[in-house]
Amino acid sequence: MRSVKKTGVLGSMLLAAILLVTACGGKGGNAGSAIPSAESSAEASSSTPAATTPAAKKNIKFYGKIVEYTSGEKMVSELQEQLKDKYNIEGIQVDWANLEKIIKTGIASNTPADIYQFWPQNMKTFADANQALDLTPYLEADNGAWKQTFNPTLLELGKFDGKYIAVPLGSNFSVIYVNNAIFEKAGIPVPTKWTWEEFIAASKTIKEKTDAYPFAIGKEKDIQPWLARNGILSLGKSEGKLEDLAAGKVPGTDPIFSKVLSNIKALYDNQYWYPGKGALTVSRDEAKSAFYQGKVAMLAEVSANAGGIIADAKDFEVSVASWPSMGAENAVLGGADGLFIPANVTDKDAAVEVLKTYLNESIQKIHADEGYAAANVNVKVSDPVIQRIMELSADVQAKEFYNFGPKIAAFFEQEFIPNHVLVGQSEASVLDKLEKVRLDTLNK
Image (tube, rainbow, N blue to C red; front, side, top):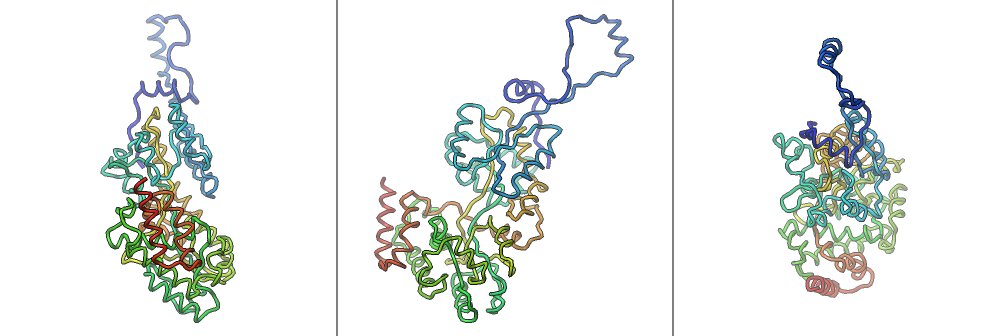
């Protein structure tokens, strides 16, 4: 990939004095105080070639080494290798628990890292404070050459007030992993995209023709609500209500919520949800274990876990299917891992060059080869599961009703499904409570 323009000599000197240090090469200028005569100077120029000063390498702090990904350290090592003649790149491990605090402290002290790992969809706090570099001019340079390398859906996640302030590394969203052997036994083709009705029909066939439960999902508060959240997103997209839902403008008594609740109740009542009556109490690890043991045909999990799930399913092949859409259009909750450059870095062009290199095709192929869905559309992968996940990322929606406020999120995590399915509260009662929580959040 082409880099953006380099900084001038004066800018380089200032950078070396403030943030960057010289690595390699001798000193320029006169070594002593004596001034050579014109004759000796002429003699020297005629007998020896002019001395050249090796270009000073710049230090770059890259706060984006993700050791939790098997690709993380390999990608940073390759980045250092590709730019070793120009930059000293320090790869810093991401401290997820303190990430936002670390970034804000660095920016406030005027000594930030040159590049930070952060989620593009969560950049609003930095956008509002004008603390992130506008990457739009770099993305659109050369007729949009860099911009065209990104999955457009994921790239849009980092756009605020018409400016791109973060770019995606890869996607992460909810998908359905399929045990191919069970589907084959049931005589069902693995779907590319499907409706909720088709998902229920497949579940019925699996239950009738095999010994496996059709579907499993963990009870954890960040997983089980996917059933409701994805249904709301799909129906909201189909009805043109996504923006209003995200803004909390759609009442809890809207038919969207009613349809989602009744669909989930039917999934449970028909015992398509592993292991039947105890379905809402099964942990994520228990759901995965049941899938690996062939007790479950379909497992709800995140796309970033594809590599591990494929490896751990030792007795059968795994495919990936989209989340079944309750509406006419598919939409799934999720987002992207990504990176941004603080607005107050000293050498913006150098930071952009390093960022572009990290996100280039060769380095991102390392990410894909380790089982992760890269955001670079030019990356070619041989694994059909990873390729399918990269395609499905086009359905990702980061803005949703669930994120309207913490009370809304807590209601979906603790009450929306359990109160109707387990406790036995009527649909109307659950939706009335949802509307109360919405109004409380709206009027706070």
